[in-house]
Length: 183
Image (cartoon, rainbow, N blue to C red):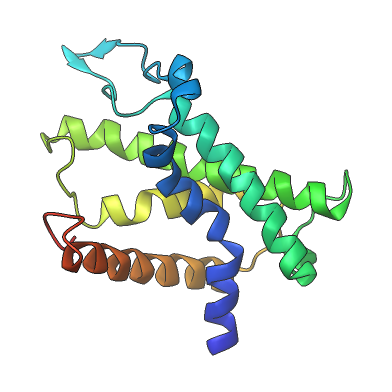
């Protein structure tokens, strides 16, 4: 079971990195030209669709960060390619594509959750448990589906492992005073 959990952490790492990467993209001045909101400022029923916090910069940087992380995981542990059904390119490039799809899916999942979060009146920055902790997992798994062959058991293991990891790291962030609330 330990090796299964380690696989879940390792395989889905590109999505986890991508999910955290928009915060870092915000600090890179050259990327400011991509700061355009994903919703382009449009409204739905009088309310912004996503708001200013969901930007093309974040999604593009997250996809790239996910791709690079996928590539690194392959170079560190080449057996990572085992679950990849894509064989259009070299194994390394295939892992970049899988990592980028995990990363893109994570951020698209987060954006979709954000849409519904606004509709039910949850303010930006406020937690919406358990959706804030699972949106990126569901999105990443869906976007990776065309490129990987994972069993239902493996998908569930990734979901549970990363949900728990998210809670753990959120609590650590709270203890380190990086977050105002533990979740």
